[in-house]
Image 1 (cartoon, rainbow, N blue to C red):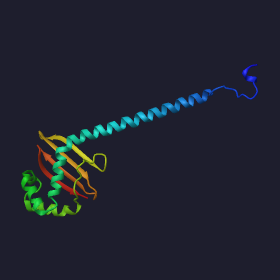
Image 2: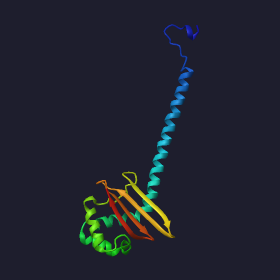
Image 3: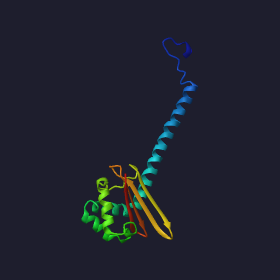
Image 4: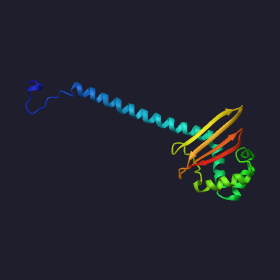
Length: 161
């Protein structure tokens, strides 16, 4: 007797061709998606580390500056320790006046640079033969803080809503 005619047995014909094709396509989609997700994660993580390393020194200075701006005496100390600020604020009193306006918008700056959260921007360029760095980010109060350095010296601070 052949298997086809055995009573009580189902025919063992296997998966039809269209099923094999569908299974193959599904496998390609799953593997492709996993590869893209993994590659994207690595790009964001490694790219984020690169940016963090480039901004680390400036970020530390931003954190310290914002801490100092929380008090009048701290703001005066900040102004005195960064003579380049005279370019944007000709006198200590003008700087203190600006800081007092900004103070309600300020909050402690996080230790970790928020590269993937909120709006963070780091621009490094050469202007008139001098290296210029501009770092800005939006804090939790939705205020945009911008710090500008030229040849490593802090020359401007701006806080806007």
